[in-house]
Amino acid sequence: MLQSVIFDLDGLLIDSEIVAYRIYCDILRPYGYDFSLAHYAEKYSGRPVLRNMTDVIAEYGLPISVKEGLRLASEIDGEYIQRGIPLKKGALELLTFLKERGCLISLATSSLEERALTILGQNRVVEYFDTFTYAPEVTNGKPAPDIFLKALSKTGIAAEDTLIMEDSEAGVQAAVAAHIPVVCVPDMVRPSNETLQKTVGVFDSLLQVKEWIEKE
Image (cartoon, rainbow, N blue to C red):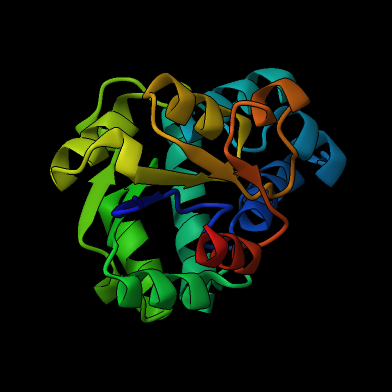
């Protein structure tokens, strides 16, 4: 019986992948580089920020350190957050449905606490969440299972009564490694068929997830 749902944030609850792409465009533009959406989707989408920044600097030979790149990316991200990053289609409806059903709702994100709470607060959905787990709380990022195991430990609910919601290849792999059922709502990049076969469902939107849970 479903008692607990653990949500990823970026690309799943909020429409932030396109923002991440624009951040790298903004960083590369002063150096005269074009950065296509197709290239971002193929190589960088859904990966940890540190890994992406390291690879972008190496690929384009940028004259900045990874630390400087991360600081710059954080500043630009803050500017986009101030403008507002919207929820994905069906997010509010699904959160409301789960809360009314009595499910415990958790957030497990590779983002930092201040950023996550700011975005959720802008969209007026912070109060839907019962527990929060952030990147600094674990040693290994996705596809390691650490963040989901940490989130699960805060709920006191068994893995078989829990459902993880993810959008990315690494996120689904992390959920599978944690032995927690997972559904996938792909964002910019669709995970491989091999990875999707390990989910309990693949959907085009969070509204479809809501309809699926209602029928279960």
